[in-house]
Amino acid sequence: MPKMKTHSGAKKRFKISANGKVMHKRAGKGHLNEHKSSRRKRALNVDAPLHNIGDQKKAKKLLGGYKPKSKRA
Image 1 (tube, rainbow, N blue to C red):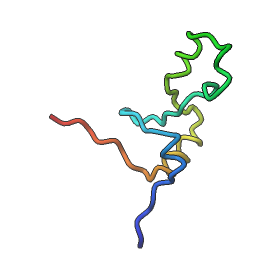
Image 2: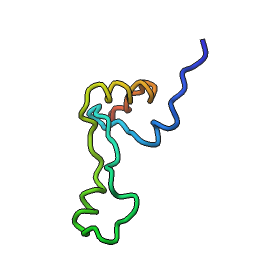
Image 3: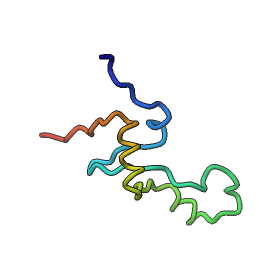
Image 4: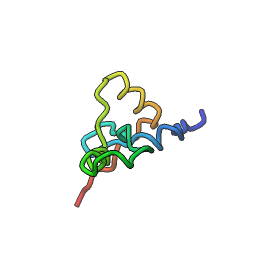
């Protein structure tokens, strides 16, 4: 069997946190930012976890099921 490939669109949109959560970029920061407050724009900088369980499973499947490397001393 050939190797499974990571979905290139998913790897640009999602990342897996150290605790295994699927994180995504928040919406609303792409354009039309001039009238938004600095406080609001800073809040949108922070990645958010996917809350829907079905979406989490789908994203993990698209990412190839890779797990983050554990930090061992």
